[in-house]
Image 1: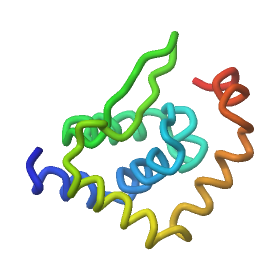
Image 2: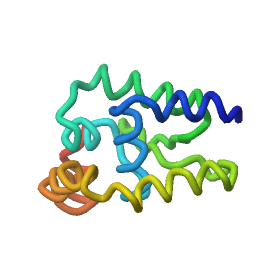
Image 3: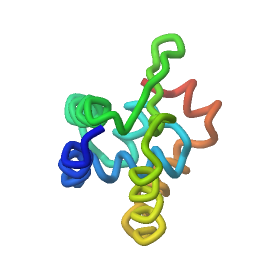
Image 4: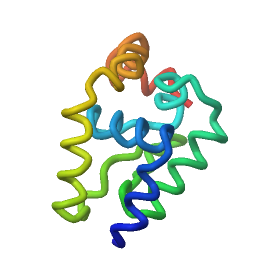
Length: 114
């Protein structure tokens, strides 16, 4: 992982918010991020692909859904950047987290997802 690639990936609002929401929730699918950020599926998918390319995210498939989470092999310094950014910007995440809560708990979200 190159530091430059990571910081470039984090320089976009949609990518940064997506990453911070994923960090806050553990893992999210595209439809959850669409609801949280009020953005289209193509836009969210494009940004998630860029975060995967920067090796910030990994994914897992569950049936028709793909869930994204912070890459477990992420360098400690990069994980620290994410954690500190999230801790220092809770108000930035408030609207997206509220929208996620409106979707219900994980099992209900999965049933209504994607």
